[in-house]
Length: 114
Image (cartoon, rainbow, N blue to C red; front, top):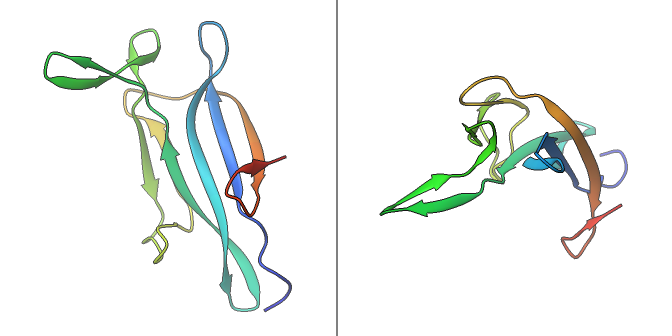
């Protein structure tokens, strides 16, 4: 294996909101050994906001009445830690226009570091 394992990365994707951008989802990037290299694998964590209506939980909207439901299509099967070699994601009700993203390195305490 060449070198030490690279630190995890957390990528936050945002979409336009009424006042400020809203967090759409987090993508956790972790490196796993493959041959003589460290290869990135990905896991998506969706950040949805819910409200209770009657006896049901329903998602709150991000924009113009469109629910914040994100679907991920993985490439291949997840490894033992739940990470995929890649995936694509989209909003279930139509296209997503990303307005920004941030990338942070995860430190040993599990908190994002710049």
